[in-house]
View 1 (cartoon, rainbow, N blue to C red):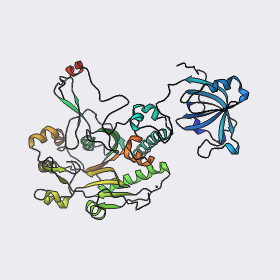
View 2 (cartoon, one colour):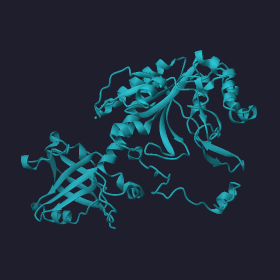
View 3 (cartoon, rainbow, N blue to C red):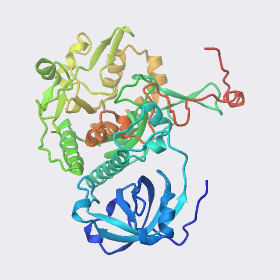
Length: 467
């Protein structure tokens, strides 16, 4: 495939940013050919970049340029030099932000050609999800995907600015950490240096953010990647992003107030204003009234956004699979003080200082006030059926930290992918993640997970066994 250089050309603006106020200006545009119409004495090209589309017209009076324009094919990468013109009234396109203008080409360069794409790059998609994921770099060219990824950036920036202005520090925590399985399965990473030992990819930064409170940082946040080896659904991925928040010297209402203000700021990105504070329901009230702990409060007002807090979850639930009590949230969640007397004899009646944030029937976040007392934390592990040896092996470092003046603290983790999904009006988080996995945890673009060479396994002290 031939290509031409454009060393002296510099973009003056993005295609999707052209408006009536640009009429008369000379512009240089770069992009992909979205549509090509050859009318003989005229050629129309819809040129697409990350900001949108604009119509380019090549007139018959342009002789050699018209011949060059006739060679253009869909998804060729081209450069256009031209003048912005106002479209006449009959040819305006009200469905496009750039629909009142067009660019009359003075020069055109084909920078690169392309194979015939495996599917047409258009909204809505006209290919199976499997094919789209295999050629994700093409699928991401669709205008809706470009908007979704841009919205993801804007949402993250909005959250960072809001939390920074609220006195929070963004602090990174390790990706290679210790396996402390008390929830979903961990993704394990074998150590080459310490053969037979493993790191785990974090399901959340839970213990590290609590340790940061012990360290005196007071207000922490992180927009962080997390990993869970679990069955997938439309709103689940093996690797996902969460907005992780922790605060010292607070009660749950402090977290509620913070998150409500942050969500109000986030929804302004799509022109939506919400009223705060959000309604509060106890877990018992929600189950009795709605039959679920994720109630949808829209009541038929579907294009609306209805938040609610669900509080006072049970501290424990019984696992038939494991034959023991397990934490409904996690084992670092504090029980309500008035229920502490029930902890030993009636643990299933103990309520937790835990809370979920629900939006339109979707849980988008969960958190709790943490246990900051060493003895209470030990009692919690005991009720979960963990032996002293297990506790020391898994959590000894954390229990040691609890000996050194721990402030009362609590926090929340918000599902960033789910938030962006709702803002974008999508039904799956895969539509707002640049390179998602399938529902069977495969990356069709790269072919992962894949085989590795025997030498790599040998370096790790591992051997492949037959399935």
